[in-house]
Length: 193
Image 1 (cartoon, rainbow, N blue to C red):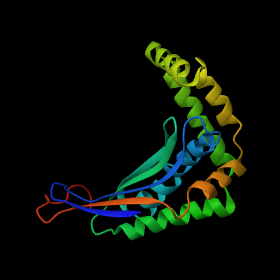
Image 2 (cartoon, rainbow, N blue to C red; image 1 turned 120 degrees about the vertical axis):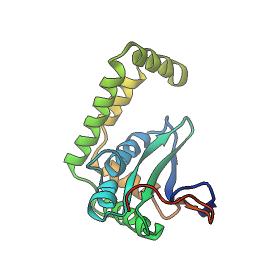
Image 3 (cartoon, rainbow, N blue to C red; image 1 turned 60 degrees about the horizontal axis):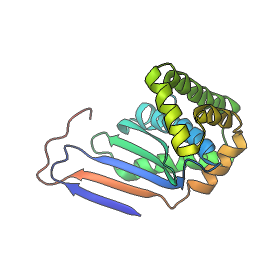
Image 4 (tube, rainbow, N blue to C red; image 1 turned 45 degrees about the horizontal axis):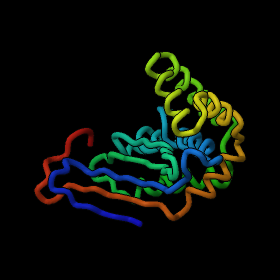
C-alpha cells in the first residue's frame, strides 16, 4: 500500500517505508532485529550509508525493527534532500534488501550487529532504573525476570543464513509507504539542499 499526503504544515518532505513482521515472542524476531540493525542503525548501516554518504539523497535516514507483543514492523524514515524523489530512495532500499535476499550478509556484519545488542544490554543494565525496568518487563510480559539475558543468548545464536531467510520471508514487495510532502501553503524547506 502506497500513500501520498500533502500537508500544508509540513516544512519539507518525509518518506516512510515499512514491512509488517512478527511480534516480540516470535523466534524470527531476533534475526529481524539484527537485520534491522545491519540495514538501518548506525553510521555503517547499509541503507543510510548509501542514501546519505554515497548518493547524497537524504539529509537523514534510519530505522529499525520494532516488535510489540503480537506484531512487528521494519521501518525506514528518510528526510530527502531538495528535489529528491521518493522513487530514488525506494530503489536504493529495494536494491539493498535484494542483495541480502540473494547473497546474505557477512559474518563480520552479523557479529557487529550482535555486539551492538550486547552493548545496548550492558548500557541498559548499568543503571538501577534500567535493571528494574527490564526485570519488571521480563516478569510481566514474558514470565521471565531475566528475559533481557535470555534475549541476548538468542541474538548470539542467529546465523547469517537466518538473516537471509527473514529478509526473503518478511521484506518482500508487500511494503507500506507514506510520502508526506509540503502542501501549497507549506513553509519553505529547511536544512541542506
